[in-house]
Image 1 (cartoon, rainbow, N blue to C red):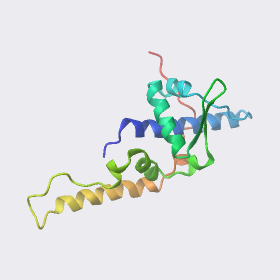
Image 2 (image 1 turned 180 degrees about the vertical axis):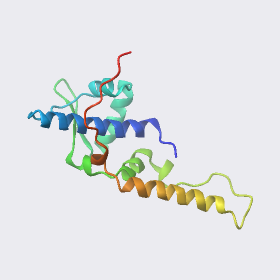
Image 3 (image 1 turned 60 degrees about the horizontal axis):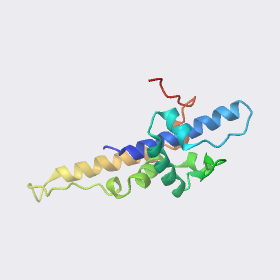
Image 4 (image 1 turned 60 degrees about the vertical axis):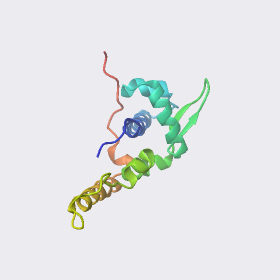
Length: 147
């Protein structure tokens, strides 16, 4: 299975926001709002891509996003409880949600390939559905590597 870049960024953005919130909590301060630009810098991704994915995460109710000079991005409580399988299905849309083989199998009626591939896709999501975003939050927030 191959995830698109936006899906991978979405997962990393949630991980980063959760790690930043944990760091603020450990320091005894309220978590601030973070900007798409600062998140992009921290995770080493283009700001335009991060902004687009943040918008999608806001649509899904996983982040609150406020525009403007005093705006920013903050996790919603539901974000940490979101199963990864569900998150990936939401971000990928129909592309992975209903996996199917594109070409007809020439070995009909006993073509086992399609059943095996469908089963593998189901196992992929079964494992991811058992893991929440909270389960993969890193101990410390990411900091982009110097170029």
